[in-house]
Image 1: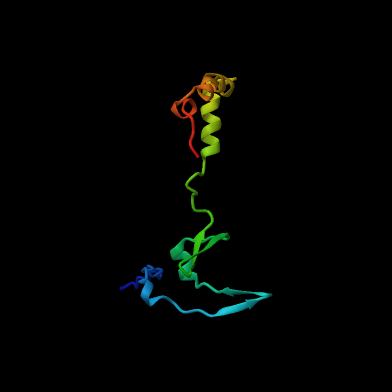
Image 2 (image 1 turned 45 degrees about the vertical axis):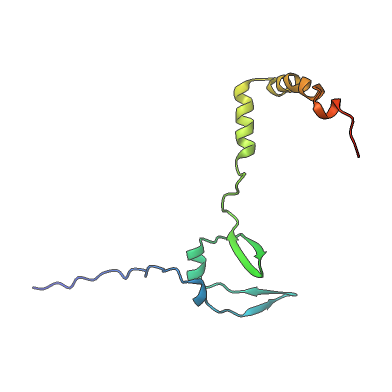
Length: 115
């Protein structure tokens, strides 16, 4: 007796499209603004979520995921961690240590300026 094997249909893999052959879309009215409806495939390829970041560069509108990591993301936490490792009063000690630096004379302070 032969049994028929059924396979689950698989989702087709999305291939990136070259910029020259981009999709065309219409601007739709949304209140006093205009918007573009993005196809699901484009949203998935770009990894977009609920929030996006918009910018205009050389007349082109760029849409990025707003969840993309910012270059300075995590600096506040890293600074707080470093201060905690240095112990209480670390910032004050640093300020005291560098206070003399502000009062150091240099060549520009010693010479007369010409305007």
